[in-house]
Image (tube, rainbow, N blue to C red):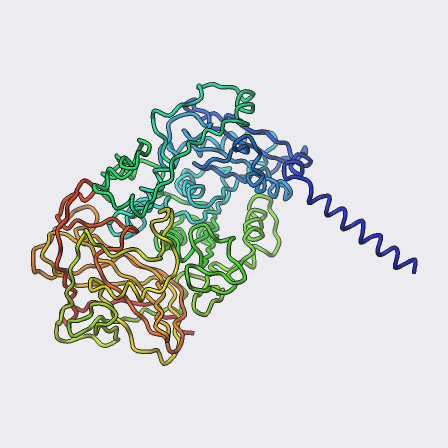
Length: 626
Protein backbone atom coordinates (compact mmCIF):
# COMPACT_ATOMS: atom_id res chain seq x y z
CA UNK A 1 0.00 0.00 0.00
CA UNK A 2 2.82 2.43 0.93
CA UNK A 3 4.53 1.60 -2.38
CA UNK A 4 1.32 2.37 -4.27
CA UNK A 5 0.91 5.71 -2.49
CA UNK A 6 4.54 6.54 -3.26
CA UNK A 7 4.07 5.83 -6.97
CA UNK A 8 0.94 7.99 -7.06
CA UNK A 9 2.88 10.79 -5.34
CA UNK A 10 5.68 10.59 -7.90
CA UNK A 11 3.12 10.63 -10.72
CA UNK A 12 1.32 13.62 -9.17
CA UNK A 13 4.56 15.61 -8.82
CA UNK A 14 5.62 14.71 -12.37
CA UNK A 15 2.32 15.74 -13.94
CA UNK A 16 2.13 19.01 -12.03
CA UNK A 17 5.76 19.84 -12.82
CA UNK A 18 5.05 19.28 -16.52
CA UNK A 19 1.88 21.33 -16.30
CA UNK A 20 3.79 24.15 -14.63
CA UNK A 21 6.45 24.04 -17.35
CA UNK A 22 3.77 24.13 -20.05
CA UNK A 23 2.14 27.14 -18.42
CA UNK A 24 5.36 29.10 -18.64
CA UNK A 25 5.49 31.34 -21.67
CA UNK A 26 8.16 30.71 -24.28
CA UNK A 27 9.70 34.07 -23.39
CA UNK A 28 10.00 33.11 -19.71
CA UNK A 29 11.52 29.74 -20.63
CA UNK A 30 13.98 31.51 -22.91
CA UNK A 31 14.91 34.10 -20.30
CA UNK A 32 15.74 31.31 -17.84
CA UNK A 33 18.38 29.74 -20.09
CA UNK A 34 19.45 32.43 -22.55
CA UNK A 35 21.11 35.80 -22.76
CA UNK A 36 18.78 37.80 -25.00
CA UNK A 37 20.25 40.68 -26.99
CA UNK A 38 17.73 42.14 -29.44
CA UNK A 39 18.15 44.91 -32.01
CA UNK A 40 21.93 44.67 -32.10
CA UNK A 41 22.94 46.87 -35.03
CA UNK A 42 25.65 44.82 -36.74
CA UNK A 43 28.01 47.01 -38.83
CA UNK A 44 28.84 46.20 -42.44
CA UNK A 45 32.01 47.31 -44.22
CA UNK A 46 30.33 50.41 -45.69
CA UNK A 47 28.97 51.54 -42.32
CA UNK A 48 25.39 50.36 -42.87
CA UNK A 49 24.05 48.49 -39.81
CA UNK A 50 21.77 45.46 -39.92
CA UNK A 51 19.21 44.75 -37.19
CA UNK A 52 20.04 41.49 -35.43
CA UNK A 53 18.53 39.52 -32.53
CA UNK A 54 20.87 37.21 -30.60
CA UNK A 55 19.85 34.43 -28.21
CA UNK A 56 22.70 32.50 -26.60
CA UNK A 57 23.09 30.03 -23.76
CA UNK A 58 24.01 31.29 -20.29
CA UNK A 59 27.47 29.77 -20.25
CA UNK A 60 31.08 30.92 -20.09
CA UNK A 61 32.01 28.47 -22.81
CA UNK A 62 32.06 29.57 -26.47
CA UNK A 63 29.16 28.12 -28.45
CA UNK A 64 28.39 27.41 -32.12
CA UNK A 65 25.98 29.67 -33.98
CA UNK A 66 22.93 28.93 -36.10
CA UNK A 67 22.37 31.97 -38.30
CA UNK A 68 19.20 32.92 -40.17
CA UNK A 69 19.14 35.95 -42.44
CA UNK A 70 15.82 37.08 -43.89
CA UNK A 71 13.90 39.79 -45.72
CA UNK A 72 10.85 38.96 -43.58
CA UNK A 73 9.72 40.56 -40.34
CA UNK A 74 11.00 38.73 -37.26
CA UNK A 75 10.23 41.49 -34.77
CA UNK A 76 9.05 39.87 -31.52
CA UNK A 77 6.28 42.43 -31.05
CA UNK A 78 3.25 42.84 -33.32
CA UNK A 79 0.60 45.40 -32.44
CA UNK A 80 2.20 45.79 -29.03
CA UNK A 81 2.00 42.10 -28.14
CA UNK A 82 4.75 39.48 -28.01
CA UNK A 83 4.59 36.93 -30.81
CA UNK A 84 5.99 33.85 -29.11
CA UNK A 85 6.18 31.88 -32.33
CA UNK A 86 9.13 34.11 -33.26
CA UNK A 87 10.92 32.89 -30.12
CA UNK A 88 10.23 29.15 -30.49
CA UNK A 89 13.14 28.52 -32.87
CA UNK A 90 15.51 30.44 -30.59
CA UNK A 91 14.36 28.46 -27.54
CA UNK A 92 15.00 25.11 -29.20
CA UNK A 93 18.43 26.17 -30.47
CA UNK A 94 19.54 27.45 -27.07
CA UNK A 95 18.28 24.28 -25.34
CA UNK A 96 20.53 22.33 -27.70
CA UNK A 97 23.57 24.46 -26.86
CA UNK A 98 23.57 26.86 -29.81
CA UNK A 99 23.43 30.60 -30.13
CA UNK A 100 20.60 31.54 -32.47
CA UNK A 101 21.13 34.70 -34.48
CA UNK A 102 18.49 36.16 -36.80
CA UNK A 103 19.10 39.22 -38.95
CA UNK A 104 17.16 41.36 -41.41
CA UNK A 105 18.64 42.03 -44.80
CA UNK A 106 19.82 45.51 -45.61
CA UNK A 107 16.93 47.95 -46.00
CA UNK A 108 14.36 45.64 -44.38
CA UNK A 109 12.40 46.76 -41.30
CA UNK A 110 14.89 47.97 -38.66
CA UNK A 111 18.00 47.37 -40.83
CA UNK A 112 19.62 50.40 -42.43
CA UNK A 113 20.38 50.89 -46.11
CA UNK A 114 18.47 50.27 -49.33
CA UNK A 115 16.95 46.87 -50.01
CA UNK A 116 17.45 44.87 -53.17
CA UNK A 117 16.23 41.37 -53.81
CA UNK A 118 18.41 38.67 -52.18
CA UNK A 119 19.91 41.21 -49.82
CA UNK A 120 22.63 42.95 -51.74
CA UNK A 121 25.49 43.50 -51.41
CA UNK A 122 26.75 39.92 -51.21
CA UNK A 123 29.46 41.01 -48.78
CA UNK A 124 26.84 41.64 -46.07
CA UNK A 125 26.71 37.91 -45.38
CA UNK A 126 30.49 37.68 -45.25
CA UNK A 127 30.72 40.66 -42.88
CA UNK A 128 28.08 39.12 -40.61
CA UNK A 129 30.14 35.92 -40.36
CA UNK A 130 33.25 37.95 -39.49
CA UNK A 131 31.42 39.89 -36.76
CA UNK A 132 29.89 36.77 -35.17
CA UNK A 133 33.14 34.80 -35.30
CA UNK A 134 34.87 37.65 -33.42
CA UNK A 135 32.48 37.59 -30.46
CA UNK A 136 33.92 36.12 -27.25
CA UNK A 137 30.90 33.82 -26.87
CA UNK A 138 31.38 32.27 -30.34
CA UNK A 139 33.31 29.09 -31.09
CA UNK A 140 33.83 30.50 -34.61
CA UNK A 141 31.66 27.85 -36.24
CA UNK A 142 28.51 29.09 -37.98
CA UNK A 143 25.77 27.12 -39.70
CA UNK A 144 23.13 28.79 -41.87
CA UNK A 145 19.53 27.64 -42.16
CA UNK A 146 16.30 28.88 -43.67
CA UNK A 147 13.48 28.22 -46.09
CA UNK A 148 12.56 30.20 -49.22
CA UNK A 149 13.91 33.76 -49.05
CA UNK A 150 15.62 32.86 -45.77
CA UNK A 151 17.53 30.15 -47.66
CA UNK A 152 18.16 31.72 -51.03
CA UNK A 153 21.06 33.96 -50.04
CA UNK A 154 23.09 31.09 -48.61
CA UNK A 155 24.57 29.63 -51.80
CA UNK A 156 26.07 32.81 -53.24
CA UNK A 157 27.50 33.79 -49.83
CA UNK A 158 28.95 30.29 -49.48
CA UNK A 159 30.88 30.95 -52.71
CA UNK A 160 32.88 33.61 -50.78
CA UNK A 161 34.22 30.76 -48.64
CA UNK A 162 34.30 32.47 -45.24
CA UNK A 163 36.28 30.22 -42.84
CA UNK A 164 33.64 30.50 -40.07
CA UNK A 165 30.79 29.47 -42.39
CA UNK A 166 30.99 25.74 -41.79
CA UNK A 167 27.74 24.19 -43.06
CA UNK A 168 24.42 25.04 -44.75
CA UNK A 169 20.82 23.86 -44.60
CA UNK A 170 19.07 25.50 -47.60
CA UNK A 171 15.37 24.62 -47.86
CA UNK A 172 13.18 25.48 -50.87
CA UNK A 173 16.03 27.64 -52.10
CA UNK A 174 15.17 28.09 -55.78
CA UNK A 175 15.05 31.89 -55.87
CA UNK A 176 18.76 31.87 -55.04
CA UNK A 177 19.68 29.73 -58.07
CA UNK A 178 20.57 31.75 -61.14
CA UNK A 179 22.11 29.79 -64.01
CA UNK A 180 22.79 26.08 -63.50
CA UNK A 181 23.68 24.22 -66.68
CA UNK A 182 20.75 24.59 -69.09
CA UNK A 183 18.53 26.22 -66.45
CA UNK A 184 18.45 29.99 -66.77
CA UNK A 185 15.75 30.59 -64.18
CA UNK A 186 17.54 33.57 -62.61
CA UNK A 187 16.07 33.03 -59.18
CA UNK A 188 12.70 31.64 -60.37
CA UNK A 189 12.06 34.72 -62.49
CA UNK A 190 11.94 32.55 -65.62
CA UNK A 191 11.20 29.02 -66.72
CA UNK A 192 12.33 28.26 -70.23
CA UNK A 193 12.50 32.00 -70.91
CA UNK A 194 8.86 32.60 -69.91
CA UNK A 195 8.20 34.79 -66.90
CA UNK A 196 7.00 33.16 -63.68
CA UNK A 197 4.36 35.44 -62.25
CA UNK A 198 4.94 34.56 -58.62
CA UNK A 199 7.34 37.49 -58.22
CA UNK A 200 4.73 39.98 -59.32
CA UNK A 201 2.48 39.03 -56.42
CA UNK A 202 5.41 38.53 -54.03
CA UNK A 203 7.06 41.87 -54.73
CA UNK A 204 3.76 43.69 -54.22
CA UNK A 205 3.96 42.73 -50.56
CA UNK A 206 7.75 42.78 -50.21
CA UNK A 207 9.46 45.57 -52.09
CA UNK A 208 9.97 48.77 -50.15
CA UNK A 209 8.64 51.95 -51.65
CA UNK A 210 11.54 54.46 -51.76
CA UNK A 211 9.23 57.10 -50.28
CA UNK A 212 8.32 54.99 -47.24
CA UNK A 213 9.29 56.49 -43.84
CA UNK A 214 12.51 55.25 -42.24
CA UNK A 215 14.17 55.43 -38.86
CA UNK A 216 17.12 57.83 -38.63
CA UNK A 217 20.55 56.36 -39.34
CA UNK A 218 22.64 55.82 -36.23
CA UNK A 219 19.63 55.26 -33.96
CA UNK A 220 20.68 53.62 -30.68
CA UNK A 221 19.89 50.07 -29.58
CA UNK A 222 18.17 51.52 -26.53
CA UNK A 223 15.75 53.46 -28.70
CA UNK A 224 15.16 50.48 -30.98
CA UNK A 225 14.30 48.24 -28.04
CA UNK A 226 11.75 50.78 -26.95
CA UNK A 227 10.32 51.39 -30.42
CA UNK A 228 10.04 47.72 -31.39
CA UNK A 229 7.23 47.28 -28.89
CA UNK A 230 4.88 49.55 -30.81
CA UNK A 231 6.47 49.95 -34.26
CA UNK A 232 7.34 46.84 -36.24
CA UNK A 233 8.20 48.83 -39.40
CA UNK A 234 5.98 46.51 -41.46
CA UNK A 235 3.76 48.14 -44.09
CA UNK A 236 0.19 46.87 -44.29
CA UNK A 237 -0.68 46.51 -47.96
CA UNK A 238 -4.32 46.09 -48.99
CA UNK A 239 -5.25 42.54 -50.01
CA UNK A 240 -5.37 41.96 -53.74
CA UNK A 241 -7.49 39.49 -55.67
CA UNK A 242 -4.59 38.15 -57.74
CA UNK A 243 -6.91 36.06 -59.92
CA UNK A 244 -7.93 39.39 -61.38
CA UNK A 245 -4.78 41.33 -60.63
CA UNK A 246 -2.38 39.15 -62.60
CA UNK A 247 -4.62 39.38 -65.69
CA UNK A 248 -3.91 43.09 -66.13
CA UNK A 249 -2.01 44.22 -69.22
CA UNK A 250 0.64 45.35 -69.69
CA UNK A 251 2.43 43.12 -67.21
CA UNK A 252 4.86 45.88 -66.28
CA UNK A 253 1.96 47.87 -64.77
CA UNK A 254 0.36 45.11 -62.69
CA UNK A 255 1.61 46.41 -59.33
CA UNK A 256 0.89 49.99 -60.36
CA UNK A 257 -2.63 48.98 -61.34
CA UNK A 258 -3.39 47.75 -57.79
CA UNK A 259 -1.83 50.90 -56.28
CA UNK A 260 1.10 48.94 -54.92
CA UNK A 261 4.50 50.17 -53.80
CA UNK A 262 7.10 51.49 -56.21
CA UNK A 263 10.30 49.50 -56.25
CA UNK A 264 12.55 47.15 -58.18
CA UNK A 265 9.76 45.29 -60.01
CA UNK A 266 9.45 47.89 -62.75
CA UNK A 267 13.15 47.44 -63.62
CA UNK A 268 13.35 43.67 -63.16
CA UNK A 269 10.37 42.97 -65.44
CA UNK A 270 12.33 44.44 -68.37
CA UNK A 271 15.27 42.04 -67.99
CA UNK A 272 15.85 39.12 -70.33
CA UNK A 273 17.08 35.69 -69.18
CA UNK A 274 20.73 36.50 -69.84
CA UNK A 275 20.71 40.16 -68.77
CA UNK A 276 24.07 41.12 -67.17
CA UNK A 277 22.24 42.40 -64.09
CA UNK A 278 21.36 38.84 -63.10
CA UNK A 279 25.08 38.25 -62.59
CA UNK A 280 25.66 41.32 -60.42
CA UNK A 281 23.42 40.35 -57.52
CA UNK A 282 22.95 37.67 -54.91
CA UNK A 283 22.21 34.70 -57.18
CA UNK A 284 24.42 31.63 -57.31
CA UNK A 285 25.63 30.74 -60.82
CA UNK A 286 27.48 27.65 -61.95
CA UNK A 287 30.74 29.53 -62.56
CA UNK A 288 31.00 30.31 -58.82
CA UNK A 289 32.82 28.24 -56.23
CA UNK A 290 31.04 26.22 -53.58
CA UNK A 291 33.18 24.51 -50.98
CA UNK A 292 30.84 23.93 -48.04
CA UNK A 293 28.95 20.84 -46.83
CA UNK A 294 25.21 21.28 -47.34
CA UNK A 295 21.98 19.53 -46.45
CA UNK A 296 19.50 20.39 -49.21
CA UNK A 297 15.70 20.22 -48.86
CA UNK A 298 13.46 20.16 -51.95
CA UNK A 299 9.78 19.32 -52.51
CA UNK A 300 7.89 17.91 -55.48
CA UNK A 301 5.26 20.65 -55.65
CA UNK A 302 7.56 23.63 -55.23
CA UNK A 303 8.19 26.20 -57.92
CA UNK A 304 11.80 25.23 -58.62
CA UNK A 305 12.26 21.50 -58.12
CA UNK A 306 14.32 20.75 -61.23
CA UNK A 307 16.87 23.59 -60.95
CA UNK A 308 17.22 22.84 -57.23
CA UNK A 309 18.05 19.21 -57.99
CA UNK A 310 20.43 20.35 -60.73
CA UNK A 311 22.11 22.59 -58.14
CA UNK A 312 22.64 19.61 -55.83
CA UNK A 313 24.17 17.56 -58.63
CA UNK A 314 26.34 20.49 -59.73
CA UNK A 315 27.99 20.74 -56.32
CA UNK A 316 28.45 16.97 -56.03
CA UNK A 317 30.19 16.99 -59.39
CA UNK A 318 32.11 20.28 -59.41
CA UNK A 319 33.23 21.13 -55.87
CA UNK A 320 37.04 21.13 -55.83
CA UNK A 321 37.40 19.42 -52.47
CA UNK A 322 36.45 15.71 -52.57
CA UNK A 323 35.25 15.96 -48.96
CA UNK A 324 32.83 18.71 -49.96
CA UNK A 325 31.58 16.70 -52.93
CA UNK A 326 31.02 13.77 -50.59
CA UNK A 327 29.18 15.85 -48.00
CA UNK A 328 26.17 16.98 -50.00
CA UNK A 329 22.90 15.47 -48.78
CA UNK A 330 19.40 15.80 -50.17
CA UNK A 331 15.79 15.30 -49.02
CA UNK A 332 12.90 15.51 -51.52
CA UNK A 333 9.45 15.68 -49.91
CA UNK A 334 5.99 15.45 -51.54
CA UNK A 335 4.89 18.84 -50.27
CA UNK A 336 4.28 22.42 -51.29
CA UNK A 337 6.75 25.28 -50.88
CA UNK A 338 8.30 25.24 -47.36
CA UNK A 339 5.64 22.81 -46.13
CA UNK A 340 8.05 20.06 -45.04
CA UNK A 341 7.10 20.13 -41.37
CA UNK A 342 3.39 20.42 -42.12
CA UNK A 343 3.25 16.87 -43.44
CA UNK A 344 0.86 14.67 -41.45
CA UNK A 345 -0.12 11.06 -41.02
CA UNK A 346 -2.31 11.58 -44.09
CA UNK A 347 -0.67 14.29 -46.15
CA UNK A 348 -2.87 15.73 -48.89
CA UNK A 349 -1.18 17.90 -51.51
CA UNK A 350 -4.05 19.40 -53.38
CA UNK A 351 -6.54 16.57 -53.94
CA UNK A 352 -4.10 13.68 -53.91
CA UNK A 353 -3.20 11.76 -50.76
CA UNK A 354 0.49 11.12 -50.15
CA UNK A 355 -0.10 9.01 -47.05
CA UNK A 356 2.27 9.51 -44.13
CA UNK A 357 4.92 11.90 -45.46
CA UNK A 358 6.39 12.95 -42.13
CA UNK A 359 10.10 13.05 -41.30
CA UNK A 360 11.79 14.22 -38.07
CA UNK A 361 13.15 17.35 -39.73
CA UNK A 362 14.34 19.08 -36.54
CA UNK A 363 16.26 16.03 -35.41
CA UNK A 364 17.77 15.65 -38.87
CA UNK A 365 18.99 19.24 -39.14
CA UNK A 366 20.29 19.37 -35.58
CA UNK A 367 22.17 16.10 -36.13
CA UNK A 368 23.74 17.82 -39.14
CA UNK A 369 24.74 20.88 -37.16
CA UNK A 370 25.91 18.79 -34.19
CA UNK A 371 28.36 17.04 -36.49
CA UNK A 372 29.75 20.12 -38.23
CA UNK A 373 29.50 22.79 -35.53
CA UNK A 374 30.09 20.74 -32.37
CA UNK A 375 32.23 17.91 -33.71
CA UNK A 376 29.71 15.30 -32.56
CA UNK A 377 30.90 12.05 -34.13
CA UNK A 378 27.66 10.17 -33.39
CA UNK A 379 26.01 7.80 -35.81
CA UNK A 380 23.26 10.14 -37.05
CA UNK A 381 25.38 11.79 -39.74
CA UNK A 382 27.23 8.58 -40.62
CA UNK A 383 23.98 6.72 -41.22
CA UNK A 384 22.46 9.51 -43.29
CA UNK A 385 21.73 8.45 -46.90
CA UNK A 386 22.95 10.80 -49.61
CA UNK A 387 19.44 11.13 -51.05
CA UNK A 388 16.14 10.57 -49.24
CA UNK A 389 13.19 10.92 -51.61
CA UNK A 390 9.46 10.34 -51.45
CA UNK A 391 7.83 8.30 -54.20
CA UNK A 392 4.25 9.35 -54.80
CA UNK A 393 1.73 6.71 -55.81
CA UNK A 394 3.40 4.06 -53.66
CA UNK A 395 3.60 6.78 -50.97
CA UNK A 396 6.86 5.73 -49.40
CA UNK A 397 10.25 7.18 -48.54
CA UNK A 398 13.23 5.71 -50.38
CA UNK A 399 16.98 6.29 -50.38
CA UNK A 400 19.66 6.44 -53.02
CA UNK A 401 23.34 7.30 -53.37
CA UNK A 402 22.61 9.60 -56.32
CA UNK A 403 19.90 11.63 -57.98
CA UNK A 404 18.41 10.26 -60.10
CA UNK A 405 18.77 6.74 -58.66
CA UNK A 406 21.40 4.73 -60.53
CA UNK A 407 18.73 2.20 -61.50
CA UNK A 408 16.80 4.80 -63.52
CA UNK A 409 16.85 4.17 -67.27
CA UNK A 410 15.54 6.72 -69.75
CA UNK A 411 12.57 5.27 -71.63
CA UNK A 412 11.13 7.05 -74.66
CA UNK A 413 7.41 7.57 -75.21
CA UNK A 414 6.49 9.04 -78.59
CA UNK A 415 3.51 11.28 -79.28
CA UNK A 416 1.17 10.07 -81.98
CA UNK A 417 -2.36 10.58 -83.29
CA UNK A 418 -4.34 10.78 -86.50
CA UNK A 419 -4.31 14.55 -86.14
CA UNK A 420 -7.07 14.87 -83.56
CA UNK A 421 -5.38 14.87 -80.14
CA UNK A 422 -7.37 17.90 -78.99
CA UNK A 423 -8.78 17.35 -75.47
CA UNK A 424 -8.98 14.05 -73.58
CA UNK A 425 -11.71 13.00 -75.99
CA UNK A 426 -9.23 13.08 -78.86
CA UNK A 427 -7.05 10.29 -80.25
CA UNK A 428 -3.63 11.25 -78.92
CA UNK A 429 -1.49 8.37 -77.68
CA UNK A 430 1.86 7.83 -75.99
CA UNK A 431 3.69 4.82 -77.36
CA UNK A 432 7.16 3.28 -77.34
CA UNK A 433 6.90 2.90 -81.12
CA UNK A 434 8.23 5.74 -83.25
CA UNK A 435 5.47 7.14 -85.50
CA UNK A 436 5.71 6.98 -89.31
CA UNK A 437 3.48 9.37 -91.22
CA UNK A 438 3.12 12.93 -89.96
CA UNK A 439 -0.41 13.78 -88.86
CA UNK A 440 0.19 17.00 -86.92
CA UNK A 441 -2.19 18.07 -84.19
CA UNK A 442 -3.41 21.66 -84.56
CA UNK A 443 -4.71 24.04 -81.90
CA UNK A 444 -5.33 27.75 -81.52
CA UNK A 445 -3.58 29.69 -78.79
CA UNK A 446 -5.33 32.94 -77.89
CA UNK A 447 -3.42 35.07 -75.32
CA UNK A 448 -6.76 36.60 -74.29
CA UNK A 449 -8.13 33.14 -73.44
CA UNK A 450 -5.16 31.23 -72.05
CA UNK A 451 -5.22 27.81 -70.43
CA UNK A 452 -5.80 28.41 -66.74
CA UNK A 453 -3.26 27.12 -64.22
CA UNK A 454 -4.93 24.42 -62.15
CA UNK A 455 -2.79 23.11 -59.32
CA UNK A 456 0.86 22.63 -60.08
CA UNK A 457 4.35 23.20 -58.80
CA UNK A 458 4.00 26.77 -57.66
CA UNK A 459 4.15 29.17 -54.77
CA UNK A 460 3.54 32.75 -53.76
CA UNK A 461 0.76 33.76 -56.19
CA UNK A 462 -1.84 34.56 -53.56
CA UNK A 463 -5.26 33.25 -54.53
CA UNK A 464 -4.39 33.07 -58.23
CA UNK A 465 -3.06 29.48 -58.24
CA UNK A 466 -3.48 26.81 -55.60
CA UNK A 467 -0.46 24.54 -55.70
CA UNK A 468 -0.53 20.76 -55.57
CA UNK A 469 -2.00 17.80 -57.42
CA UNK A 470 -5.54 18.15 -58.75
CA UNK A 471 -7.77 16.14 -61.07
CA UNK A 472 -7.22 17.67 -64.52
CA UNK A 473 -10.19 16.05 -66.31
CA UNK A 474 -12.23 19.25 -66.64
CA UNK A 475 -9.21 21.16 -67.95
CA UNK A 476 -8.62 18.43 -70.52
CA UNK A 477 -11.93 19.18 -72.22
CA UNK A 478 -10.39 22.30 -73.79
CA UNK A 479 -9.55 21.98 -77.49
CA UNK A 480 -6.39 24.06 -77.02
CA UNK A 481 -4.92 21.28 -74.86
CA UNK A 482 -3.50 18.30 -76.74
CA UNK A 483 -3.73 15.10 -74.71
CA UNK A 484 -1.55 12.02 -75.28
CA UNK A 485 -2.18 8.93 -73.14
CA UNK A 486 -0.46 5.55 -72.88
CA UNK A 487 -2.15 2.17 -72.89
CA UNK A 488 -3.26 0.83 -69.52
CA UNK A 489 -0.15 -0.35 -67.68
CA UNK A 490 0.06 -4.13 -67.35
CA UNK A 491 2.62 -3.66 -64.58
CA UNK A 492 3.38 -0.78 -62.24
CA UNK A 493 6.43 1.34 -62.97
CA UNK A 494 8.41 3.83 -60.89
CA UNK A 495 9.49 7.04 -62.61
CA UNK A 496 12.17 8.88 -60.60
CA UNK A 497 14.46 11.54 -61.99
CA UNK A 498 14.62 14.23 -64.66
CA UNK A 499 12.06 14.08 -67.47
CA UNK A 500 13.14 15.21 -70.93
CA UNK A 501 10.80 16.30 -73.70
CA UNK A 502 11.24 17.30 -77.33
CA UNK A 503 8.43 18.70 -79.47
CA UNK A 504 8.36 19.62 -83.15
CA UNK A 505 6.37 22.79 -83.77
CA UNK A 506 5.18 24.82 -86.71
CA UNK A 507 3.16 28.00 -86.35
CA UNK A 508 1.98 31.11 -88.17
CA UNK A 509 3.48 33.59 -85.67
CA UNK A 510 7.03 34.80 -84.96
CA UNK A 511 7.06 33.52 -81.39
CA UNK A 512 4.89 31.47 -79.06
CA UNK A 513 5.23 29.19 -76.04
CA UNK A 514 5.00 25.44 -75.59
CA UNK A 515 3.83 23.93 -72.31
CA UNK A 516 3.81 20.34 -71.15
CA UNK A 517 2.35 18.63 -68.11
CA UNK A 518 2.95 15.08 -66.84
CA UNK A 519 -0.13 13.24 -65.51
CA UNK A 520 -0.89 10.02 -63.63
CA UNK A 521 -4.28 8.73 -64.85
CA UNK A 522 -6.18 6.49 -62.44
CA UNK A 523 -8.52 3.66 -63.52
CA UNK A 524 -11.56 5.82 -62.69
CA UNK A 525 -10.29 8.57 -65.02
CA UNK A 526 -8.91 10.96 -62.39
CA UNK A 527 -5.83 12.64 -63.82
CA UNK A 528 -3.36 13.98 -61.27
CA UNK A 529 -0.64 16.42 -62.33
CA UNK A 530 2.96 15.61 -61.34
CA UNK A 531 5.09 18.35 -62.91
CA UNK A 532 4.91 20.94 -65.66
CA UNK A 533 7.20 23.14 -67.70
CA UNK A 534 7.23 25.73 -70.47
CA UNK A 535 9.50 26.96 -73.25
CA UNK A 536 9.40 30.37 -74.91
CA UNK A 537 10.26 29.32 -78.42
CA UNK A 538 12.38 32.36 -79.29
CA UNK A 539 14.94 30.92 -76.82
CA UNK A 540 14.98 27.41 -78.30
CA UNK A 541 18.62 27.87 -79.43
CA UNK A 542 19.78 29.31 -76.10
CA UNK A 543 19.17 32.30 -73.88
CA UNK A 544 21.86 34.54 -75.34
CA UNK A 545 19.87 35.20 -78.53
CA UNK A 546 16.26 35.48 -79.59
CA UNK A 547 15.59 33.56 -82.80
CA UNK A 548 12.13 34.06 -84.28
CA UNK A 549 10.20 31.63 -86.47
CA UNK A 550 9.04 31.63 -90.07
CA UNK A 551 5.43 30.72 -90.79
CA UNK A 552 4.91 27.04 -91.59
CA UNK A 553 8.48 25.92 -90.94
CA UNK A 554 8.95 23.04 -88.46
CA UNK A 555 11.20 23.71 -85.46
CA UNK A 556 12.69 21.39 -82.85
CA UNK A 557 11.96 22.58 -79.31
CA UNK A 558 13.58 21.04 -76.24
CA UNK A 559 11.72 21.95 -73.09
CA UNK A 560 13.40 22.46 -69.73
CA UNK A 561 13.40 19.14 -67.86
CA UNK A 562 10.72 18.29 -65.34
CA UNK A 563 11.28 16.12 -62.24
CA UNK A 564 9.27 13.66 -60.18
CA UNK A 565 9.25 10.40 -58.32
CA UNK A 566 5.94 8.65 -58.93
CA UNK A 567 4.81 5.07 -59.00
CA UNK A 568 2.31 4.52 -61.81
CA UNK A 569 0.35 1.54 -60.53
CA UNK A 570 -0.84 -1.38 -62.59
CA UNK A 571 -4.05 -0.31 -64.33
CA UNK A 572 -3.00 3.35 -64.47
CA UNK A 573 -1.97 5.26 -67.59
CA UNK A 574 0.74 7.83 -68.31
CA UNK A 575 -0.42 11.07 -69.89
CA UNK A 576 1.01 14.35 -71.07
CA UNK A 577 -0.78 17.55 -71.95
CA UNK A 578 0.66 19.95 -74.51
CA UNK A 579 -0.48 23.52 -75.01
CA UNK A 580 0.91 27.05 -75.29
CA UNK A 581 -0.13 28.61 -72.00
CA UNK A 582 -0.35 27.87 -68.28
CA UNK A 583 -1.56 31.17 -66.86
CA UNK A 584 -0.99 32.77 -64.38
CA UNK A 585 1.70 30.30 -63.32
CA UNK A 586 3.59 31.69 -66.32
CA UNK A 587 3.05 34.95 -68.15
CA UNK A 588 1.33 34.92 -71.52
CA UNK A 589 3.22 35.06 -74.77
CA UNK A 590 1.44 37.68 -76.87
CA UNK A 591 2.70 35.89 -80.01
CA UNK A 592 3.93 39.15 -81.59
CA UNK A 593 7.68 38.71 -81.16
CA UNK A 594 7.65 41.83 -78.97
CA UNK A 595 8.67 42.30 -75.35
CA UNK A 596 5.42 40.86 -73.95
CA UNK A 597 5.78 42.81 -70.67
CA UNK A 598 4.80 46.14 -72.28
CA UNK A 599 2.08 44.81 -74.64
CA UNK A 600 -1.66 45.06 -74.22
CA UNK A 601 -2.80 43.18 -77.33
CA UNK A 602 -1.83 39.76 -78.62
CA UNK A 603 -2.54 37.78 -81.75
CA UNK A 604 -3.96 34.29 -82.03
CA UNK A 605 -1.45 31.61 -83.01
CA UNK A 606 -2.26 28.48 -84.98
CA UNK A 607 0.20 25.94 -83.59
CA UNK A 608 0.89 22.45 -84.86
CA UNK A 609 2.69 19.64 -83.02
CA UNK A 610 4.31 17.24 -85.47
CA UNK A 611 5.02 13.54 -84.79
CA UNK A 612 6.55 11.32 -87.46
CA UNK A 613 9.75 9.48 -88.31
CA UNK A 614 11.18 12.83 -89.43
CA UNK A 615 9.71 14.83 -86.53
CA UNK A 616 9.56 12.39 -83.58
CA UNK A 617 8.07 14.41 -80.73
CA UNK A 618 8.66 12.51 -77.49
CA UNK A 619 9.00 12.49 -73.74
CA UNK A 620 11.71 10.50 -71.93
CA UNK A 621 10.88 9.07 -68.52
CA UNK A 622 13.48 7.80 -66.02
CA UNK A 623 12.03 4.36 -65.29
CA UNK A 624 13.60 2.71 -62.24
CA UNK A 625 14.50 -0.93 -62.78
CA UNK A 626 14.81 -2.79 -59.47
